[in-house]
Image (cartoon, rainbow, N blue to C red):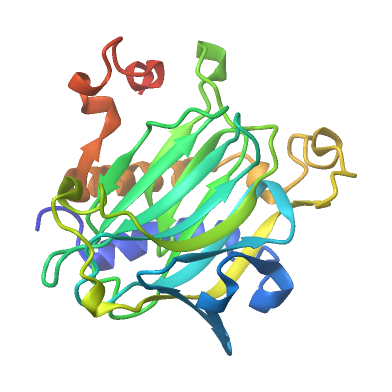
Length: 292
């Protein structure tokens, strides 16, 4: 495979780690941070691990007890082993209402022997259709790997094992909407999506393999926390520029290495980008695609 060696990848990311590793994080027991919001009988907590189960009757999901505006949210996941076709495991952030904002990791299952696909997406003011799809450089069913969002006023990073796979930059000054005012909860779910998830819906879920199980662990939230009852004004509590570490200027060396990593991921693992899908958008591809 072309591109940086695994050693050089980790070496390149060391500079970024120096910037963020010393920041305090909110790492806690699942029940302190989250609550079930769908089929609680299909969610089992075993020590540090939370197992989500899917069968022919239902999937399941959980949400954070609090909402956050800007910061970093991370979880480690171990995905469904074997034939996972038709299933979707999701780790995402979302606000509420029809004009909601949302940041998605969706892991699209596949038949045995074929790789998982990770789909990232953003909804801004209720509008999505910003999907990218990547293969991973490892088997996500064999061990736990970390998936995280780093969200600030400048950009949103989607990271896998602290390696950025996607960046959505703030281009509001050029007329592109950007999520900055709606606090988001942190969610996880496992569900059946065999109408689209695997090979465009051609491969259906094989329920003889149920129950399907995906496991979460090691949640870390380092973000501007808001009251769940809406008592906090996010513009006051989270709105002052430079108030938190994630708003600090990015040093030149970090920015340079991040760009190298994003290019390596793009060149080697990107398999779909909405910005390249001209046939999909009758009125032309979204404006942000012209501004990269």
